[in-house]
Image 1 (tube, one colour):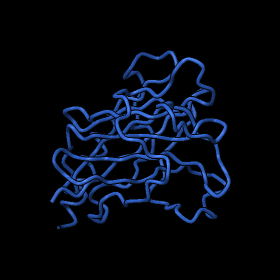
Image 2 (image 1 turned 90 degrees about the vertical axis):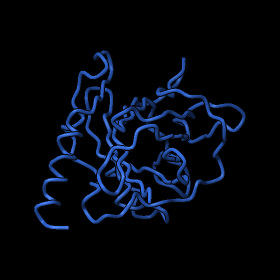
Image 3 (image 1 turned 180 degrees about the horizontal axis):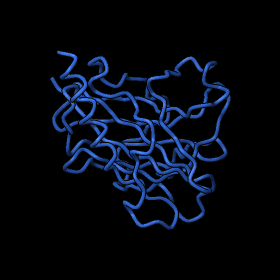
Image 4 (image 1 turned 30 degrees about the vertical axis):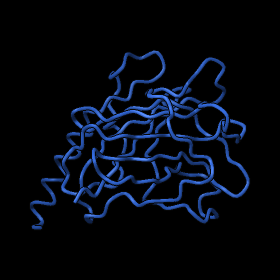
Length: 201
């Protein structure tokens, strides 16, 4: 691939990302531009897909379809995560299943129900939007969110997303810098971004 092609692909990705909605708090949906955040790894950086990670012991199938994991009584700092799912050739991947699960603000996973668990599908432009809370830190792990991503009729990618600036990152045996979300503070709410890159071929 020529240098000019790489530059134009990256420019295309940044333009597309600037249109991602990241509505938070009382703002209307789509009222904040996620492009204000630094981009996560672009599909044209080195051609590598988002790296896999272990699912851990708390994955549960058949989570409810929803783009907000917040329910009445949910405690914790709200975070809105947006992004786009792309192929390694920088094409958006509509209809990708994204299944998220995490611990609560006390470090506990719901193993009997579906609190802080849910799945959604990317839109026609490969975009997604998730409302949740910042998970707690628990012994042996740094702060993280689990996710399974599956493009239509393709294999499942299981991975984990991490928070920048966490003291426990470097001591966590699973932590990877290329799985860091880009995060900004907007009042009492955190706005995050992560772009998934899937190998479809």
